[in-house]
Length: 251
Length: 320
Ligand SMILES: Nc1ncnc2c1ncn2[C@@H]1O[C@H](COP(=O)(O)OP(=O)(O)O)[C@@H](O)[C@H]1O
Ligand SMILES: [Mg+2]
Image 1 (cartoon, helix red, strand yellow):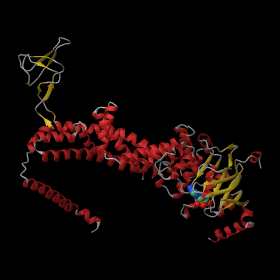
Image 2: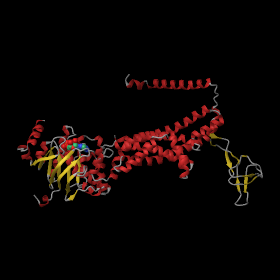
Image 3: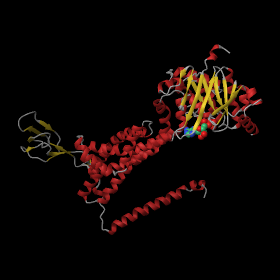
Image 4: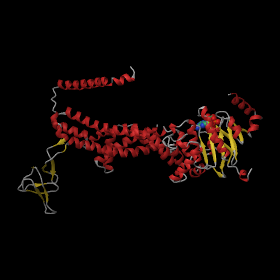
């Protein structure tokens, strides 16, 4: 590995998230992600995967521990948080495209308002990204007229338009009809092959096996174990992981 | 019956509706017969458009002289200060040559058609509704944003405002505006009316705005923030454009309410359409004709507004 890999791009140390209602979403979880690394997070529903991902771009505050992104502490001060967020892209299960804007306007909004790009610059960047996810011809279409798979690809392109250093995916294919899962995973594979740093929460074990550098298993708010995909799937050591894999592979 | 059958025979049903309407009007007429009411619709037009001419008032205290043509009138200031003023084309002088008049006295009438009291009242109703609408919108949007703010003080103040206003009658609020705020803040009757109406309507608009904003899914805000947009940018570019579609229909209803509620300002020495109606009734003794006419005039205002809003709504809904 190169020297830059020694300073992790994301470093979460002993973070804890207690929700206002008292639920402990995360219990002292630690995770570091190196530049260019693809980390896949798996675990049963309610195990804290979304919570972990959301703390990494400040959508949830943490109640203990600390997070650094590219060496900067993830502050709670609004201005700092905003600056750091521009280097962390997020893709949601429900796409969350802006329904009142066309596909290309979805991509252009943040670069114009946050990075202060001119309309022409933002448009050029957006066109390139739409072409990259195979939707150049849908630029002027509104989200409601796109299929789920297409919407999620636009959402990926929208996050990429901010040129983030790392991309977070929270179950990006879980809301899709089965026949559309492939097209979204394909885009993600391509991103990974280009060296994008990625954290992916998914139930797609095939994707994890093929693309991940490291697979992390979470259960009940804890990071139980992590390993390279080969060891993770073929020689699981942890009891809880074995149970989980049995259930997932049976389904 | 299927819907295609209903639409093909649509005219039959509409004819039936007309019949019911006619029966209703007929029974109103019969009801008025029973109390020996004489309908005098012919008296009404002059209260809409007056052909009696426009009254000319004396601009200052002075002595009047009437020219030989009996139409041109000159008024010379009493104490010899300032220039004399000549008023041409007075059709019906109501003062005599050499008479001393005081400011505001009626000198005579100019020929021509002018707005009658009902139209003048309608104009005041329109003006006070429109000005109140602008203030109510500003107030309502601010209070609505306050209700969904993260700042507890903003939330408290906005809730306090909304609860107080929605918990008291408009008539009482207008009395307070007129008898308390008008003298203490040196407001004219019109300003006090605008004050009362916009504070009242603003509270209802605040609730509409709050509901509209809360109807925008949380994921929209999260997506926007994860892209680095600030809270204000998120509101401006993501939340409000979506909320507006949900806000518009109830907002239109609230504007229509505002026009109707404005009739209550007739208690505040303001001659709006309703007050004008009362005055015309007392000079014509034709309450039935006057109040039906006044109702129709309100209907034209509110109906027109509904039409405009329907158009706007269709245009905004294009993308769903
Ligand atoms: N906003 C919230 N308020 C309270 N509890 C929450 C909230 N979001 C998640 N939780 C709880 O935190 C735990 C972890 O949830 P989550 O991170 O969504 O799990 P996962 O994404 O692995 O399914 C669950 O017990 C869930 O009920
Ligand atoms: Mg989740």
